[in-house]
Amino acid sequence: MVCIVSTTNLGGLFKMRKILILLSVLAFAALANAQWQSVVGSPHDLSSTGGAPAALKATNTTWVCDFCHTPHQASAVGGQYPLWNHTPTATAHFGVYSSPTMNASPADIGVSAMGGAVVSFLCMSCHDGTIGMGNLYKQPVLTSGTTVSNSAALMPSTWSVMLGTSLTDDHPINFAYNNALYLADSGLNDPSTTAVSSLLVGGTVQCSSCHDVHNNYNFPFLVKSNASSALCTTCHHK
Amino acid sequence: MRKMLLLLIVLGLSTSLCAAWQSVVGSKHDLSTGGTADSSLRATNTTWVCTFCHTPHQPSSMNSQHPLWNHARTATATFGVYSSPTMNATPSDIGGAAYGAMSMSLLCMSCHDGTVGMGNVLRGPGDISGHPAPPPSNSTTLMPSSDPAYIGASLTNDHPVNFTYDNNLYLADGGLVDPASPAVAQLLFANTMQCSSCHDAHNDGNSMFLVKDNAGSALCTTCHHK
Image (tube, helix red, strand yellow):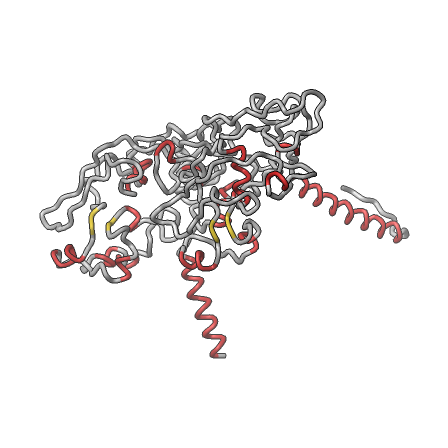
């Protein structure tokens, strides 16, 4: 940008500097926004206009949030925040990953009652493949029909995102990532650093440590870019 | 002044420890576009690094192996074992065992025996578009026999691996260091010697991915009383 400013017009010069500062602030804000892509239209959007595959989408509602949340009376039925609206899986035991070189002690996510369940249990409402995508407590206000059309549509087992009812073959979750673990495992980064602690939920690793279900800017719903495996190396000192 | 000197010494030591570490990202084990593996072996369509060996989800439904293993296994069933009239150890063949129960050294041979493509993975990385994500571009690229890291499908001409290094072996072989000593014990895996006894696949700080500096052959003499 080339600016020609009269030397006698100092007021104009200051104004120009203010505008430039404002422009750079806006540019930064735009960059930050570029890291965000709404759940609306994403593969987690199961409405008729969503980005989910056609076989899993509803054909009779354009409401998006309903597939997981309802503004009213969620907990009376499901006993679970955050205003949870999806029928929970009946899977009682998912198992946990084990390895002779692992120091963490993951706990099964399937034994808790809704409300006391770990946050990762909510993801399995769809991702264990046993509950219909649109199997909800409260139906969205529809243009036609009384229930969403995909209430019985199960996630196919051939999909890599269909984790199934076993977590024994997935990266461990639901374990405390604390200083004791850090000291025991020389391959981990210090959980007191902001980069690590910002990914933990109540000091534990959960699905949401790596995935932000509402933001698909970093496919597949990663909380940060994994270029050069930067997400993995946030925790793994490798 | 003495406190400052002490501080400097401490800092110097910690720096030298840090210097022995170099991330797998950007190393010769980095097969992504940003890696320093030979360009003929690298993928041209993914920047993900860990994906060539690990996947966060569902590796075992296909090959039931920790540590979250994502690379197609070698089909080599028999590698053979090193033998020598002066050796007291009794190494076992690393091939043929069921996935999940096998020697961890077999994982290394996913690439280093030269029979499986560098990018032949079970789950493609997320930055290649497609559903499910296709494998990286180097999925059929084999490690050539001319590569210095090429081991081939025979282990008869390599330092023995996959044998128990216990007190019996120590007593039988006058040339070994006591495996009860921490220096030796920390290199063993369930009392056995494996590829990873000498090599840390994730850390190239000592070059050749050695687990420690081999100046003065210090790595060799950790076990060999020579």
